[in-house]
Image 1 (cartoon, rainbow, N blue to C red):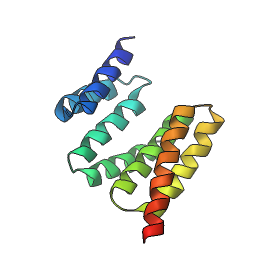
Image 2: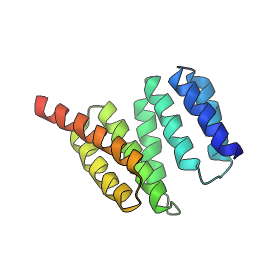
Image 3: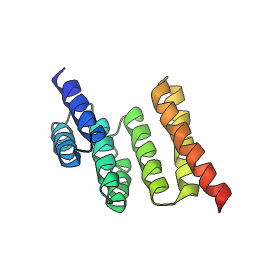
Image 4: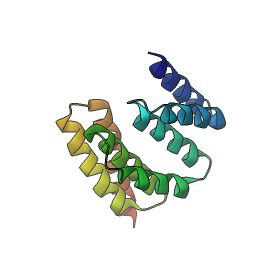
Length: 132
């Protein structure tokens, strides 16, 4: 679909360090109201994190997490994003808690790639906690 292609383009822009381009594309996808809005927000927040705006990304993730009309998978993606941003800000205990919660949800929806993302956050948060 057109949205899938746009997400792929935004992800490619992020991987190549073209953060403004990724941010613009992610915003357009999110604003379209498509079912991929949660994925677009995740890309947007990664752009923010790469540009040193992790606090703003965390605030946006928390706001999105509080939305009442999120699908269960969308909520899980917001939990994961919040965990990722908290880890980037050195908030390992909360990152570990949220990543664990997201992992359980992704397992119940059989989404192994997102389970992997959760496990990475959990491993990094655990490492941070053991160094403290």
